[in-house]
Length: 106
Image 1 (tube, one colour):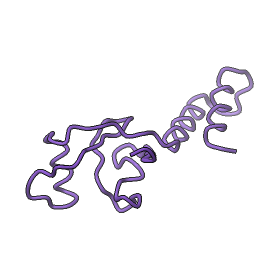
Image 2: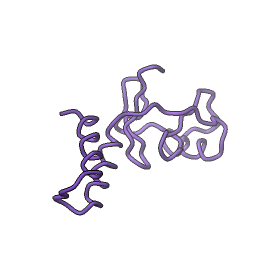
Image 3: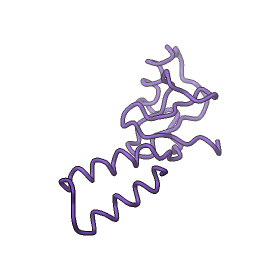
């Protein structure tokens, strides 16, 4: 079963009758599954102070860098390199909220 299918079934079971668990348990499961379904990052502000500070922490940059920055589509925090990255050096997940990221079209 895919994450998407499991998510659909969990959401549908909340509307129906016969809960086996507390409704909050279902909600927590839904939130966890939603974070595992990759979402496309959004274009960030490369020159924002927040992005620059996060980048400097990760790669010890001495001056602003000129490539495009990206933000998490869920929490809107800057995406920077982590130990778990794609082949292009882009993060697979947001380090702040854990959202899986989809870089296919970039």
